[in-house]
Length: 348
Image (tube, rainbow, N blue to C red; front, side):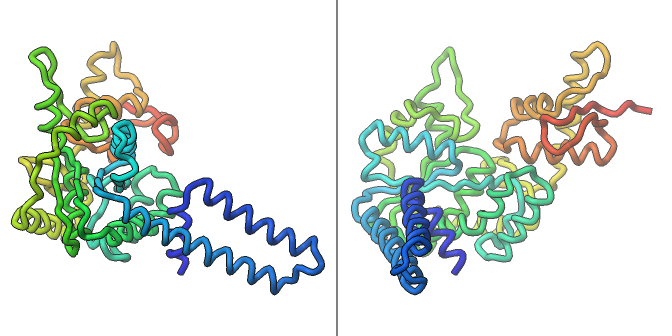
């Protein structure tokens, strides 16, 4: 029951939540200050408020599905936000819906992610290893259920477009999304933004390497959108092949995935450790003497030269791992990147 309530609140807009809260507080105050407004009437009023709000949100979802002509799945708030803005600029925001997957799928366990015990395992790993907002982790399970509910409620006659780049995060998310869609009868269109972006925007003087879909500006989204209208839905064979790949990922207990040879590959969590050490050594070479560097400087350098999309949280976790192993020295407190500096330990 509590999960249903969480999902109901998460689906509410800020204005809807404020309006509901105002009604509840007004009823409570009315009972305290008005003699003929009994506690029994207060309970009934609160019950009615819940029922009306629940029915309102349910009908709102039904009405949205009735007017929706196409659904887009994107992996990341940045990508989804830019795409929504582009749809609005093109006048399509009333009839085309965006569903955002907000998790980072390149790291952390995904074993049995569709089951509550699998999600709990992932939450515990993230809590222990990654500096993430507590509220995000607290809401992780209910966010997943809200996402699954949105997908499940989609009418079968609405085409679904999945936008994904060539990186471990989006390609893992793509396979997971297809798993959530496996019982749906919708036509599914798969758009790989990385080669399409190069095809549309490369010039002899400027070559683009799109690391992830979140890098696309709203202005260029419109161009990409207009160049995908003639695409064909993916075949059953292609969908089954990607589902098989998800089953393999879903069975793995590894916590890190990379994009290699057009495939998502599970690797050991220390896969990037040598890359971190080499990058720190390169920074030291630019110094007159080996000095401490802000961890944020090191991680920024790592991200800038990485050919996959990983984000800073996992890399910072591995930097802390190298500190623990004695490979890096530390100055400060490693509770967040801005609080400490590191340098390679002196040899000998």
